[in-house]
Image 1 (cartoon, rainbow, N blue to C red):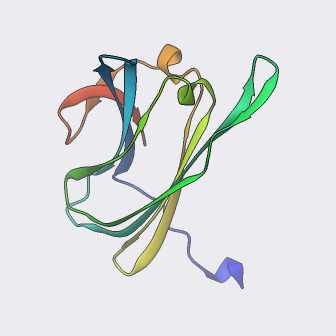
Image 2 (image 1 turned 90 degrees about the vertical axis):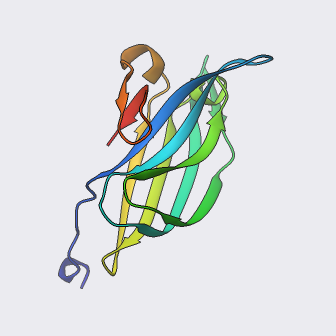
Length: 134
């Protein structure tokens, strides 16, 4: 029965992490969902969770869920501000949304060393530099 359900690939939707400076904290990263489609995404559910091993100890962040009614065409939506401590473990962004009467979902994995192994690139729609996951 499950094999009868078509699995459609998620395209033209990405996750951007944008660096920002905060006076008392230092560097922060702001996560955005970016819609590159010519149509809106509806009922966007975002599940964010971090976890992994740091200095030999298992660390987990709280699981946070967001519901966004709509992300317009060629636009973005800010998800959350991430402190450097949160980025010290891998983070998973699991996104589900409705488009063309079909429910899509995609996982974006942000490795704990993303800031060191990835280069800042131009982020579409936001017109700034950051880390891009598609």
